[in-house]
Image (cartoon, rainbow, N blue to C red; front, side, top):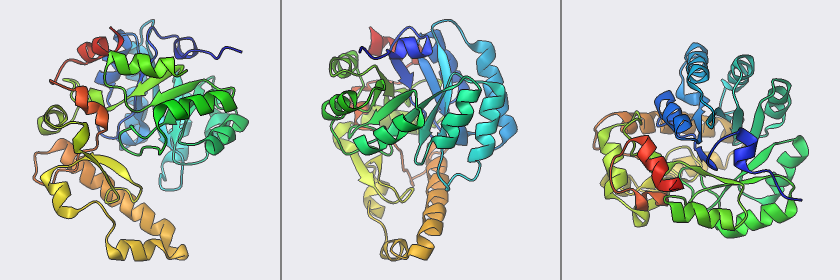
Length: 316
């Protein structure tokens, strides 16, 4: 049985979701994306209050055009104390889709489907893909080992083919797409569509510093390293002089505390909070303490461009 395409799932022109990026994604970017025929997604955590989140949804609903689609990303584990209220607002206002990350999507799928909202779930392996399929997910986001941020461990082709073979859900590939050729390659492996993040950091519309955008132009795939120093979970960043100075491994104290079962959850929550604050400062201010999250697909980023031009480069 042929699986549903991303265009069919979201009623969009091109098989592309502009991936949700912490601090980077905003309504300007999503509006430009929709006007270019793709879907855009924003992390709910980019909004400090529920009122701000609600206002952003209303803005995107007014700006939506045929051939475009918008959604939000929810962190569905205990580190996100705002999760349940964010889910409530998304369902009350109505969005096209929700992408879930870092936890069980069971409640999100149940509540979103009541509101007519599709749910796509981040997965990195077959076991979790089978789990979210059993819970009723509409598609899976296959996060491979070329993704930016919290990446998977499996190469794109192997992951796409495995999930296509073993599940009935459409597979949206996340990671390693920075050009039209990359997109076409993922589709040839059997992807229903792709989720693209890092190439959009260096867009005119992105709300981060010019230094962060320019770093995505100046650095390339060879400059991407994994660090445990942001959220406690390995994350890809640009290997700036500051990252080289502080190192990419947990401190001895962090490692010791993470081994204590009774403290592990709280340590992870505190590490996540501290890391997100550090990333926020680096993303929005010119500072020598630069921790810039990105993936190897910045290899194809040669200039800071209007978002529509970046989309054109991906879809031809």
